[in-house]
Length: 470
Ligand code: AMP
Image (cartoon, rainbow, N blue to C red; front, side, top):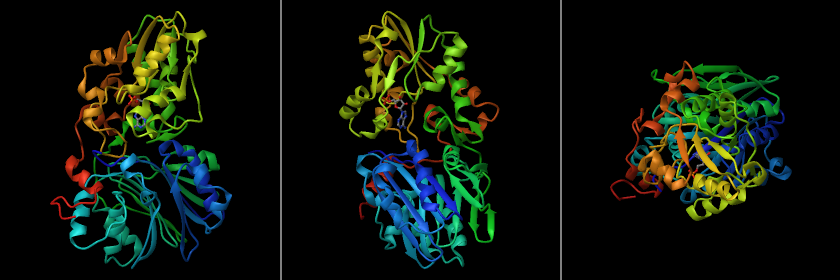
């Protein structure tokens, strides 16, 4: 385990009699952001109520599970994590009671100084109950001498660094916070008189809410009976939106960082076709992640696009299985080639990204076995050469094939006839004129916000102090 592994979706709603039911719907729309645990906390003006468990939204929240979640305010969370960290105590919302009253917290992102802060706090006698970086925020909150809960939140969030899109719930406030770089998305919507905050606009669409705006980088948005107020307690900072949200992570029907994911993803495919054409008969997307880019590639190249691989939708994301062997097996459960489309053809396979390379290798093998004459693999982003410390789960560098092999060596490994990735310039062009606002550290290895030494983070995971006193 090299670091925290969190990919999450958050949702919050203020001022609706069916807050918990709407939160559940919102989490359904955000399920792609995390499938290992789900949770909802509600507030009824006096106290907080919480249900969270391992599993997907449909497993955690049947009708009965919503019964205790009373109140017209709710926050919810879906979380992905890998094995070591995959514990129900880490499922969110995290809820504590302290001198400021009860508070529940949902976090999408990754705090790069959590290990240091936590080590200091442990030395001072604080007890931690989870291995999640997020708990640090709650401990800082509980320690704050600030006069109001809102001030205490501001005091605690200004001490953490890294990526954080947070939604918090007190007995009578919904609060949304976005880190000053705006790494992860967070949007505000309106549903009648109710206010909604969530990771992606697809959750607003599902509940019939209207997209109002993004929570701005560095904004603390407080919503209560008096309306909503914004605070800007952070020094201004460079925008560093995660470009991988557009490449893979967000849903294509969402607006993320003010841009249509579908539009950006289709552009990635168009530019890829311009940069890396191939003499071929057919473009085949690797579903679902390669769909939009394949459409763009086909449009630009003038080649037909065909569904030469069919996905079984009842299997979760490949990465859900933590061990390498199981991951390989899952590719076959998930995808089946269509012989009538592939046989005798020169095929362009389009996917969004390669991480370890095992998925692509399996797919190339399957497509070859289904009779394809040539296979040209096209990837709609540059090689992933460095792990993400800002909230996307990527394995450590040693497991990233792009960090350890040349493009030609990767082609050899996956046994395709050709392989090409989109260039970094192409990626920047695809997101358009605001490309300077994006973080591309997974493609460059340049980390714009200092990242922890792997060993420190490892120790935090193991609940130990860096000096071994933990
Ligand atoms: P791999 O076999 O490790 O190369 O897996 C690559 C596949 O995983 C691609 O089809 C991607 O769509 C998908 N993928 C890329 N990054 C992630 C991630 N952070 N979490 C889950 N899936 C991912």
